[in-house]
Length: 293
Image (cartoon, rainbow, N blue to C red):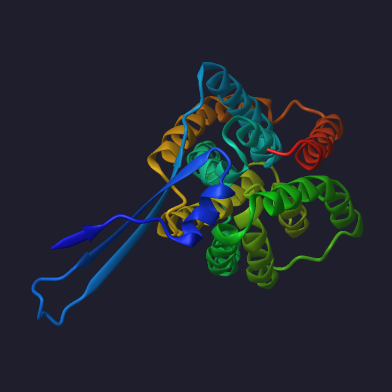
């Protein structure tokens, strides 16, 4: 048996644009005998990430707690808070894998606290379109450069404010049959920016979902996309144990925030809250565009 370790040109390019991530590439060629007819090559590229220091952990955990309270009340906002914090702490390339794991765990808490209000018909139809689109979008994410991701994420956060207002103002007539198409569009977008709540929210509200029904149904739809994305990232070797560790800790933190949010759901002004969220969207979007990570 002859084993070689080498780094391909494609892996060098991936490592160059990975920011704080490093890549381990292994290749093995096996020949049983000089005259043997069998030949096998196996390639593996594993994305690795440095774990944050104490200050980085403090920033991320605080962001997860605040974000989960916001997301538990409005149905979106947790990922918006964490997206720039993860990019600032761990690098732009780590945002989607870490946030995917975080939101996967965090959405379980939102589902648990509102589980009796879930609209299964909406969730199933949304996921019918969202799951294949999420898988396809994740493959595109794996090929995108860090600079492209930075502009897409920043542009999305800023554009989400007028888009959300336009969708609510026009009051789109959303029927059950529309949700596979809505899911496909949201799923493709979610593979790059992960947090698509500001865009998805108007469609759920226009259908008539409110409070607990909206929170639970949106959380189940988001959970399905996170599972699909995590599977795609694992297959593309973009998800490492370090990503899982950070995402698991942040997702666990979100359980506490979701519990607090459930108790705040009845007593908060929608107008004041949405004004704060929109300010965060614009500010964080500008941070992505103006401060490269």
